[in-house]
Picture 1 (cartoon, one colour):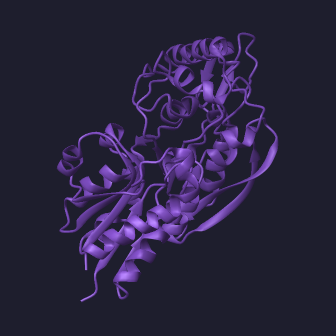
Picture 2 (tube, rainbow, N blue to C red):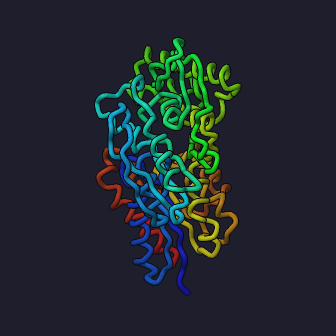
Picture 3 (cartoon, rainbow, N blue to C red):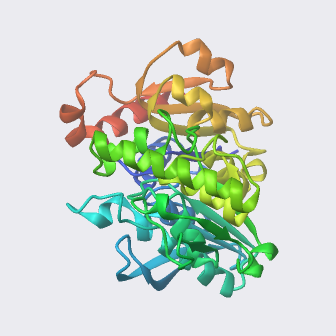
Length: 375
C-alpha cells in the first residue's frame, strides 16, 4: 500500500522559499517511495510570497488591480482568490511592503492606503472571507491609510479631512467611523499575525520595527508618540481603549488598525493556513507529515509553523518530521509538542554566508538520507 505524505514547511528565510522546500522534499520522497501519495502545502508568514503560497497549495486565481503604493503613487498590485472565489488572500507587502520603497525608506510618509483598496476590490468581487497577511511592511501609520480607504474619516484640528501617515498621526483631532464601508459587515476578515507587540512603547511598532524601515532613534521616538496619540484619539472618538492586544504593533500598527477600524480577527498565521487548507481533513490518514522552518528555537514554541503543525497533527496517527536549518534549545521541548523526528539541514554547522549558496544541496542530501531510513 502506498504511503501518504503531507509536506507543509515555512520558507527558510534568505535561502529557500516554502515552495522550493516542498519540491526538494517531494523529490526525495519519490526517490524512495515512487508510488507515494503527496500533498504539498507551502506556508508563508503573511509577508511577501503569501499569496503565491496559498495559490500553490489551493490552486486559486491571482487578481491584478491598480492601487496606491507606499508613496500614494499608482501601481499594479494583486491579491489571490481561493475557495472558488469565496475567499481572498491579501498580502500587505504587495502594495505597502519594504521592498517597494527601495532606498527611500521613510516610515513618516509611507501609507497602508493601498491595502484598504485591495480589500475593497476583493469585496466588490463578492468574497465572503478575506485573509490579510501583514508581514514585511514599510509603514508606521497605525493602519490609518487602510482605514481611510475603507471610509473612515480623520480630521485635523481645523476639521479638515486628511489621510494620516506615520509622520502626521499626531495631527489627528477626531475620527469618524460612520462612513465605513457597510459591506465589511458581510465578510469575515482574518489578519494573520505571529508577533505579540503592542501598538506603542519600548516593545511597540516604532521601537521594535521602525529602525529596519529607515527610522533613526529620534524618528523612532517621534513615530512612537504618534501611535500613542492615535490610540488616545481612538479612545476619545470611538470609545475603544485597546492598544496593547497581541499583534497591535504588527506592520507599523496595521494589526491595530485592522482590528479597531475593520473589526478584524487577529489569528496566528499557521492556524489560518491550516484552516484554509483543510489540514485536518488532509492529514487524517497520512503516514508522515513533514514540516519545517529555517531555525527551530524558543520562538518556535510560541506556535510558529513547525510547532503549530505538530500540535494539530496530534489528532492524527501520522509521524511528524521537522526539517530545520538549525536547531536551538532543548530537543525534548519540541518532542513534547508532537514532533517525532528532527532533520537539521545545516549538518556542517556553517555560517549563514557559507550556507546560503549550498542550502539546496544540503537539504537534498540530509532529507534524502532521512527518507531512506523510512523504507
